[in-house]
Each structure stands twice: as structure tokens, then as C-alpha cells.
Length: 515
Image (cartoon, rainbow, N blue to C red):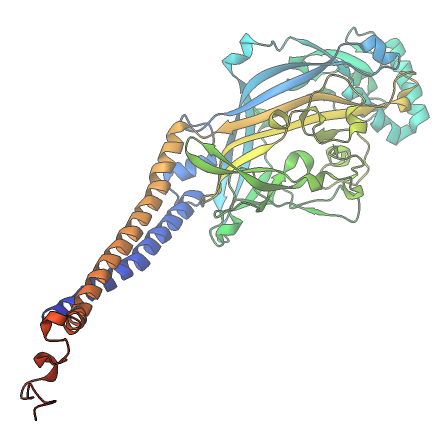
């Protein structure tokens, strides 16, 4: 029986080793996983070719395509609108393009930041030809004319500006222009045209740009931007990964209501800090609205076996706010920064420009009710980003924004019967999704590593439990044997209560009652 105690003690060694393995190896694996994630999401001169290419350009064959689907709203009852009725809108589209983003003049500083200039341009996808044509004709409000009038008003005052406009319109004959409204092709509206009416109006609005287009496109080499962006790579602090610090040469926006200065900050929506969880908030820099936007999450979704957090815009930030000249719920007024520029003076005149969710989702009904034909769907018309929480990488995204303008009785000299109307012009959905190869690679590398860590942990726990139990059995076996022998009547118990092994050698068997 003496061998059991040494054997039991020897079983404690693998128990200790298993506990050490359970504590140290998974921790080491998880640390290596976090390091690997950091290597993949922090952009530097020494990044792997895949990481460098991911940030430098998004048009590699292996990268997911960024689709830009444009939808244009057509007024179908212009005569009734001019008589005072609400516009009845017909949606045309999608007009589908691929959006390309290419960075140039890339350099890294010692503070862990990267600077670059950026090209953004569009190429038509073949599916475009099978549905809608860029030659489709659209009737809408004449935004260039509204802009020219606003600028002329700043020079001459409203009365004089309107009088000059009436004189120009009386002498101007263009079948595309009907008072405050115009008819143009989708191609002209989206990608631009030289406006002959604006050319006539240059004398009452000096400096007026006679070219009008809704979507900037830097396809032509002469249009390549020279303005610079500066981004925090997260090298010094991973929680700051891909935080915008300078956008288009600007670190702040000063054209909101004084004294407010809007700092440039937030992700571009492609990469967020790693380690996200449900209930977190993230910020994105939204250049379209000249400010940072907050996204919140409380929903998880699945994409081909990858668990994602779904982020949506925080409804609280859609509330009316005089700082941003916003007077209606969900309707962002960007007239001032669009007209004045990021560094310009607040209140510079320009055409009224508003951005919102598509189809006026989550917008004040007083705005949505000024037109007919919109049909809000949260699933189809509101921005959403599906982010992998461990890496902070956006695996699926759909950014949806609608541009609108406003007209009404203030233009009665041109259109005496029109009512105050918030008229949607077009909306765009930019969407993208990780490829199946990317998702498979992620599951293999990240989930595979996590599974290996769990396997090591549970095998170690199992080994520790097995040898602990074995040691317990061996170390307690003598005690159990003695207890079993002492309680067995057939082993010398009974009435005498005499057991030689318990009394020890040299003790008389009849020590009691021998006399």
C-alpha cells in the first residue's frame, strides 16, 4: 500500500503543468491574435502587401466592389405643381456605378499618422444598361437658378435680384427651362453640364459657376484633387485607429453658426477600433454633412458564419439644432457650409441644400407631407454598417443619403402659386460586402485561432481534472482501506473488539479480561 502515496503525489505534477498550460497558452494565443489583428488594421510603411493595398486603394480584383446606386426623383405633375399642388414624384433608378477610391502622395510621420490625397471616381457597371438609361428625362426644380438668385440677392437685394431675373427669363428661350423648374437628362444632372441660363445670369451674380453637377467625379486628370487628408493609423494607440484628423486640408469646420467650430474627427466607416461590443458608440467623419456622426449598435447579425454588430445613426443627433441651422427633425441643412466652404463665413447665400435618410425616413412629417410618392422603409432607406467586433473591420455597409432643396412663396415673382415644398432631387446608396474568400480567410485565421485556444484550455482542464482525481484516489486509498478494515465484523470485531493490527505488535491479545 506504500506505493499509493508516492504515486498520488507524482500525479500532482501533470496537474500543475496542465493548470499552467490552461493559464498561459490560451493567453499567449489570444495575445498573438490581438497582435495579428493590429498588424492587419494598422497601416504603416512596413505593413504587409495586403494591408497596404487595402488602405491605399479599393479597386483590386480581390477587394469587394463599392456599388453606388443613384435614384432620381421625377416630378410627374408639373402643371399642377405650378398651380399650387404637391409634387407627385416618380423614382427612376438605380443607375449603377462602381465607386473607386485611390490614394496618392502617401507619407507617414513619426506620430503614427498618414497623409495622402484622394481620388474618388465612378465607372458604369454593365447592369446599368439593362434597366435605366442616362438619357432618361427628369423634371425637377432648377437648383442652379436658385443658387444664382441667392447669390444675386446678396449683391442687389431680393427685389432687384428678382426683377433682373424676370428680365433675363423673359428674353431667354430654352425648352429645358420652365420658370422655376427645368427638364434635364439623368446624365446631365448627375455628371454635369454647362448651363446656358447661368451664363446669362453671370452679370447679376459675379463669380457664378456656370457648370452644374450633382456628383463630384475626378475621372479627368485635370480634376485630381490636391487637398490632403491626415489620418491617425492607431500605431501609438490602437483605439484611435483610422481616426480622421484633417479632411481636405481642414482640421475644423467654421461655417456653422458662430461661435461653434466643428472639429474634424471620426472614422471613414471602413475601419473602427477593435474590441467593440453591443451598446458601444462610434463616430464617423461625414464630409457630406460637414460634421461627425454618431453610430450606435444593439443588434447582431450573421454574414456567412461571421458574427457582426449592426450600427445605425443615433436618432438623437437628428433633433433640431440651431448650431447646425437645423429646424426639422432628421433634415440636415448644409446650405451654409456648401455655399461658404469649410472655412467660410456662416450665412453665405446659396441654394437651399438638405440631406436626410432616403425617402425622408425619420424626418419630420411636416417635411415629408409636402410631396407625394415617397415610401420609407427602414431596411432599404436608412444607413447601416455591419462591423466585425474583434477587428473593427466593416464587413458589410450601406450608406444611404437623399439630397433635397426647398422652394415656396418667396419666389412668387417667378412662380406665383407654388407652395412651400421640400423637394427631393436624388438619393444614393453606396454599398459593399466582404467577398466569400475574405470571409473564409477571416473564419480560418481568427475563429480558427480562437477554437485552438479553447481546445487547449479545455484539454488542459480535462487533464488537470483527471490527474487530480487520480491523485485523490491514490492518496486516500490507505485511509479508505483502514476504515474498511475497522468496520468489518468478520475481521476480528464483534463483541471482543480486538484487532491485532490496530493494537500493534507486542500487545497481548487478551489485554482486557485476561484475569
